[in-house]
Length: 179
Image 1 (tube, one colour):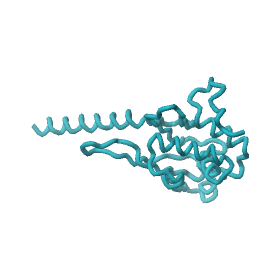
Image 2 (spheres, helix red, strand yellow):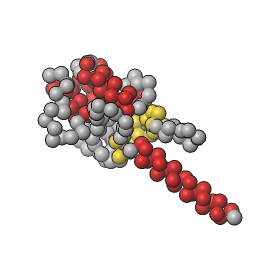
Image 3 (cartoon, rainbow, N blue to C red):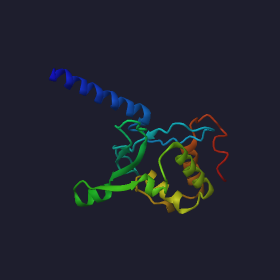
Image 4 (tube, rainbow, N blue to C red):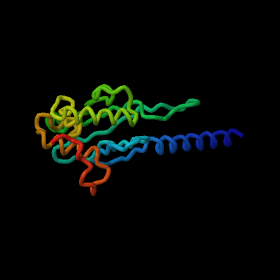
């Protein structure tokens, strides 16, 4: 009987892990962020930082805080914390140095991380493309390898276009971004 209960317990855990993965739509080891600007937004996919080292990028990983495992849970991502390995400091001190880079809600001044909140962030970035928030977005995009002053208006527009383009073949996907 105990083996049956233990097996059932493992099956339930596996089921909920699959549900969380499907609902949250996580994609790992990718280097592109896609925030779509659909008429009705109903789903937000998360793409994690890469642990692979590249020129001008620190390796990183993300820890997600998820609403879950109680009756009526939404299983939405409530927040995420990005941790990076500072390559410069790691090489200088000859030891691995991980740094908490940012918490999404705090860094981007968001109430939640629901699809509409990400849409609102994109609108704020479009309305102040040369402002400090876009500088911060660029810094975090490079995993703190560069700061926002190294990205001029054209760079910021390109980055924002990259964020909102779900279809690279659409020549008008970024027409709403100020020139």
